[in-house]
Structure formats: C-alpha cells, structure tokens
Image 1 (tube, one colour):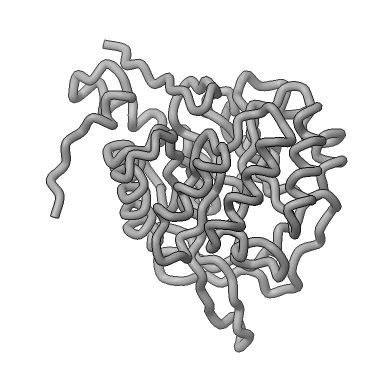
Image 2 (tube, one colour):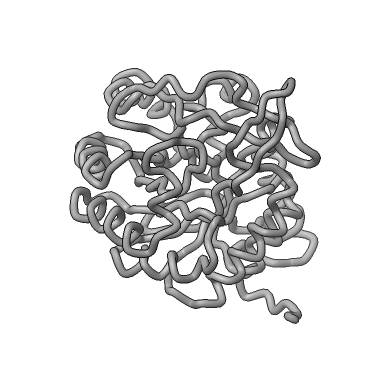
Length: 301
C-alpha cells in the first residue's frame, strides 16, 4: 500500500503535511545542502519586515533543559531583498512557499501584504502577531482579540493570497484569539509560537521566546483546544515537534499539517525523517490517507 500524504490548507496544496517553521529554516539555502527541498510539504521563510532589521544585540540564544530561549529580534533582510535575492532560489523547487510577515503597526502589515500580493509564485502569507522578542508590535497584537482582528482584517483586505495567522500561547484563552482571527477573515491558523521565557547567559539575563521539546505538551493542548472549538479553520500545529511520533499526535488532535522548528538546530534532517516516519506509520496501520488521522477518537479527561 502506498499511503496518500497529500493535504490542502486554505487552497495551498501540499504533497505531505510537514512544513518548516518560520525563523528556523532561513530561506532554505543552507538546508538544501542536506536534503532535497522538494520533499517538504511547504516552506515558511524567516519573518519578513518592510525594512531590513539587524535584530537584538548578543547574547541572543540561551540553551535550557529540553529547549532554548531565543531573542533574535526578527533579524531579516527586508521585503525588497526577500523578493529580489531570496525567492528566486526557492522558485527552483516544486514546493509551496509561505512568507511570514511581521510589522510594528497595522499599516506595516498592510503594506507587506500589498507588496507580496504582487509577487509571482507565493503560496500564502503567515501573519506573525505573536513574536515575544521585539519591543514594538510583536506579541502585543496577538494577546488582544481586537488587535488580532484589526491586523488580520488589514492583511486580508490588502491581498488575495491565503492568510495563515500565527498565534501566541501567552494568553488566557487561545480560542478567543483564534475566533477573532477567523472573524477577520483568516484562512488558517498556526499555533503555537514560543512561550515567554528567561535565562542567564554568562551572567546576562536574556528575555525571549522558549521553544523546543519542552514546549510540546502546551502546544498540543492548545491545538486540541482550538480544534475542539470547531472554528472551521485548518490548523498548522507546531511547538516541540522533533519526529514522526510528535507529528502524529498533533494530527490526531486536529491539526491538518505540522511545522518543525527548533529541531532543525539539532538535526537538519528532522523534516524528511518525520515524513518517512509518517509513511511507515500509515503503512503499518493500513491507513490509506494521512487526512484520516484527524478522525482519531482519543480518550479525554
């Protein structure tokens, strides 16, 4: 039996449900030395702003038990260089490319959407309203339902591309924020981004976003919460996924696709190994389509 791994999110057709998480895969060039990028379900490129950003000063990374804290500060080349210098490389591959966008104001999100809407070959946008390590905008948008609605509505009114909204876990009720994103016109949801965290690096306190395997139980719980709310939007589950077993658990609680992030820093082959593991699981259990995993009936407490 050859299982069907194809899925579709908001009109974006993918050969499998394994995506790369923004901020951990750069623009794909470095990882193309390790495996064929065509094997991926989709690539989400590094968070992009209107103008280039240098990011935060060092130190910017702190290793923690089962994870890491990062305070990169959305360092990126800016949208003009992305379009001119980075996207041509990704167009060589037969894989959907989604651009993660970040702004300090609603107007910046709007302008980014307008610019990228005119770029050939893009599959969609991921709206980053959940970054915990920038001083302006960032997480402040994603913890407020009204701000979430305002940002997402601006983006949706400014482009024709499918819009995924990346949600923060640093809220009291994730469903309230997810519902606001839907009401504003979101086509899909990505959850979760990093948790707030802090750690010391050589005596210096670093405040930023916590990611890695330690995040998985919380991420799984939040995906389950939003899936159970039955908002009618596809979910990309992410947070601590390192292998096929992790991916299966997110799919079983209601995610349509998953994204791998911090695991790439440890294992550049994490995505392709996860894809292979999903295939083996489907074959072993005689499941002919990965989409059937979402019908899994788990015991609840």
